[in-house]
Length: 124
Image (cartoon, rainbow, N blue to C red; front, top):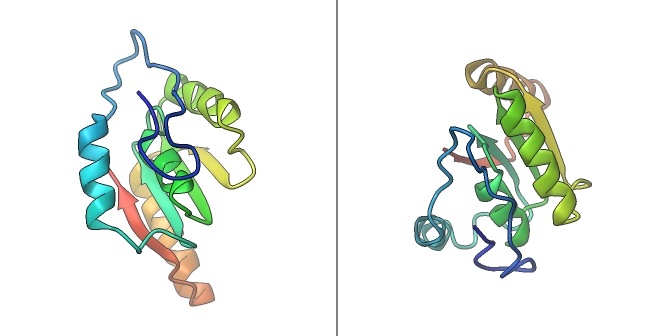
């Protein structure tokens, strides 16, 4: 697993090993980000079911201002923290160990209250 483009291109991520996480293939990530070309830079991204953090870290590499990673699994969050540290991306990210549905509700309510609709892409 690696970052496919941007400022962190080629950097390797820690593998999930025996964890029941299926990270997206590099080719799938490239396809999704090619479709979103120009929509990521400077935006806040919500990476639900984050697992290894592969999608959100790809977004940071491609210029996202900030990524909020959400996963319910303690082990996935621990792996995600390690990947954030490996790539020195802790400053521009937040991770939440919580139910994804609650997270979506909370982020939508905050966006409505502040009229800040900066969450443009949700990676699943």
